Length: 462
Ligand code: BGP
Image (cartoon, rainbow, N blue to C red; front, top):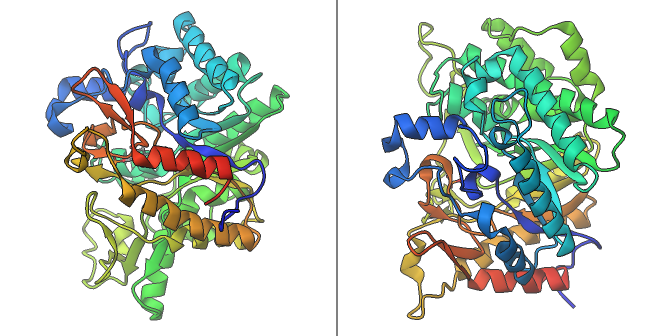
């Protein structure tokens, strides 16, 4: 009898995305997304100059990979459809080869007892849509909703768990604030417009899903990085609260409550940063509440009150209100440079229980990235990743406690099943239960954590 037993029918599995695993980037009628384009123009932005062309070859090896999922205890798996594969120009013709491919992976998963969770957007804007302004353009919202509707019509008879977006705040931060992703814009006003259109596109996709009368569930996946204040001093607490408004509540409130937080709207108004918004669209956000929430969690955000006064001539950024804080003595994943703070998973679950009507959620990503994981190989080439087993179980203990105290969590998906390509970090940080040798024909090999995960899932706990 496991010490930490999870609820019946709990989903165990992992998450990945189409652009990070499919490979076959220029094959099967697909056209460029912003990632292919950016790699062509700026390959030096990518770790070791490795781009999105091949990734893990899931496009060709999905059958073998689904068997590996079974061997590692998956009863569910999340990936994403690439918009640029299904509708290569963003709007218009549907690509029959893509329909065939996504049908095949969905059917193969179901035939093997792996419940497919399907996401529609994981940072991968089709280039044709970016050329007309991407998420800044209201027309791209309509194009996305058409794409979502097409996916629901094609696959909604078998896919019962849908997500409209993965980590939309990353699209906003990385693409429009901090220069991590294409289109490398640094302009907070434009960032707000992008965020607003993401929320709107989500609500309209939920509406389109409902209109089809399908019997599955639809939601969004948010990286709810909690903001902890340096101290209980009111100035620190306020700083953390404002960071939370910008980076968490900005998405969480509209998708669960139908409204943006009033305090955030006030701040944006004060700085003349409100987006252009048609009242009819605002009503759509209010009226189309989703069914389920995906929560990604890797590391906490720590915040302190501003230490130096803000220069009023500087362009506005949320950091007008807080400084980031490095807590002395914090526990680190030294292999990735991220803090480990397991209790945050509990805090988030309790926050959702108490402040968001105990909304049903699953942990949609959590995991431990390790740079240079090959250095841990045994002589026979196997990897005993005890650090990953410890990372997962330490988080699961806190999740278990939250569920015990009434949190409405129905699953845990690890990032990720197989080591995969990760945006500008390419293959730098490995997260998989299964190693992928990118230098030897993408050969797969189950790590110790993969075997442990199988026992975890078989026992529904540990
Ligand atoms: C998450 C993304 C994933 C994945 C992961 C690891 O935020 O949703 O797509 O890439 O981060 O990121 P990294 O490889 O940069 O550590």
